Length: 146
Image (tube, rainbow, N blue to C red; front, side, top):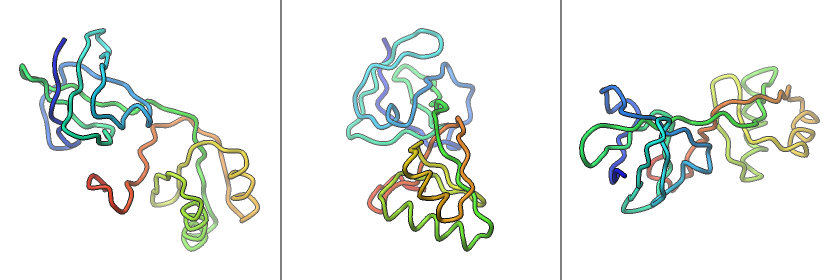
């Protein structure tokens, strides 16, 4: 078992990964946990403090090498609007309900919730169920926000 005590942000490392760990959104907020790579090899993630691992981050192995973090696709809602202004209004309603959201130029992704989907459709949104990696925006006090 290899120990990991350092996270390399996505884009800050360039070597070929020694392995990959595929995790959903909840599985990517960790401090200490046993992880199993795609190869079947086990790794002990042992960070000084809990943090959110993003798709493409690298987990630096104590003996050298990097394990790539891959965001597992999960059931989401893709929200689109007729105009940028309408999308901003929808984003406000989503934020007002304190929902985790991945904000893109022309759509927003949130976790599937039929009640929220109905509310957004009532507000004029086009809502589609999708399976995609989920990497929502960090909070105002999250030092790893992007």
